[in-house]
Length: 113
Image 1 (cartoon, rainbow, N blue to C red):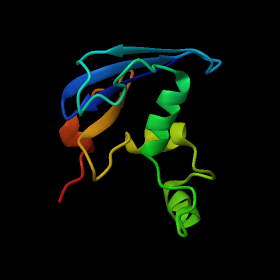
Image 2: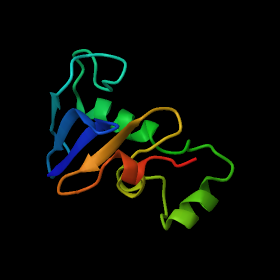
Image 3: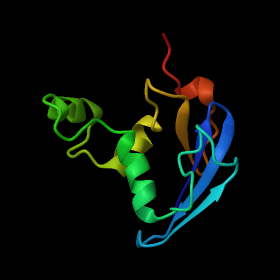
Image 4: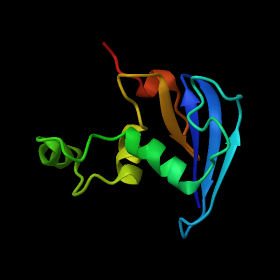
């Protein structure tokens, strides 16, 4: 199984469990639907999780994508691998992904200016 928690800074927002065959997903909303809940509404599908993970990656059509992937040690723009590497941190918000068993917090993963 693939287990992770979507965090907003140091607060858990949603727990996600994906089956080993990647055909089933369970999303437990820890906070109610709001601007920081990426899984608002009733669509709690695997496609919704994939879209969320993909939104934390560089765009596929980006001119320098291959260079970025090479620097990251990746061969393809795989959302699962990219988010494991970056914890899904972006400049746009304070959401990030904490994987099962990790002992990290927002201070460990956030962009430092």
